Image (cartoon, rainbow, N blue to C red; front, side, top):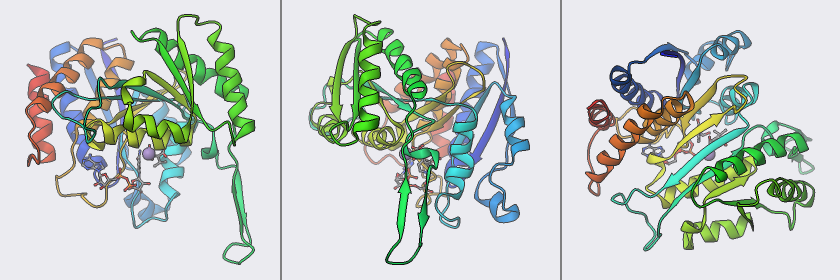
Length: 347
Ligand code: NAD
Ligand code: IPM
Ligand code: MN
């Protein structure tokens, strides 16, 4: 395949700013690698919600579904009640398109440094479950606003859902040189879900005898992410733990401005979606202050998913070279960074 269709959802805050740079870089590599990306932009997010009350109408979801892949910026805005866009747009996409593998790689680029004094060789990937856990919306509130209020968010973990993401994580560990998988959960307290995860990992492990399997409670995992992040190779974990761990992972490895992700549908029954780990950053939106690198690296993950291995490698190499030139407190604008990376990726 040479011509790919992309659904683009810039979204809110810095989302459109960083997405524009990712598209710039995709254009630069597509010219060199003889492919085209035919883009359709979807006007979704805070502005749309204010104007129409809509987050993601089913008809538009059906249109988005027809594309080869989705590139998303970020959603969420202080003028919209918290949760409306996050659930009604972003999570609706992840759930409807069965993005059960939320892939979040972390590595320390030698020159960019880390807030950690001696982090060692950090290169791991978090395989975060993307369709279950406390995110499913199973819960509710009673007697809201009264002293007798009760609020529940029930974490849903199915044998089917846990097994498929655990299998994916083992397969990824198998394809990596260090061949190590760490399950992160909290099975000393969350005994129902935790034991399902642990049993599933132990069962699937028998099919992958050369993978070293490890288990950490999530609280201890945060210790080791700071004191010894080089111990990790593939981390598999549930939706909420994975969300939290991957912001921490970003912080220790060059910052949130570099952290890319893919919401993958490994069975390819629907398009996968690529987006930075970060959010809409309302504090810096509209000022050309955002680092677009995370969005650009997400575009590299997109290329990889579409089988465009060389294009993905060209983007990663361009980013690596760009990062090598960065100095502390760099003052380039969002689009200057995008221009610089696009130029390198093309050449
Ligand atoms: P955030 O990631 O938007 O911002 C956290 C901090 O990181 C802010 O100081 C911000 O300026 C900084 N930051 C983020 N991206 C950056 C970049 N590319 N370059 C430089 N600095 C960057 O998280 P938040 O403040 O918790 O959330 C803001 C909104 O975004 C909320 O509405 C939240 O729900 C939403 N959100 C969306 C996504 C998503 O769309 N995938 C992810 C996280 C948060
Ligand atoms: C992320 C975000 C989302 C999540 C929110 C905005 C729904 O924090 O992509 O990390 O929790 O998955
Ligand atoms: Mn998050």
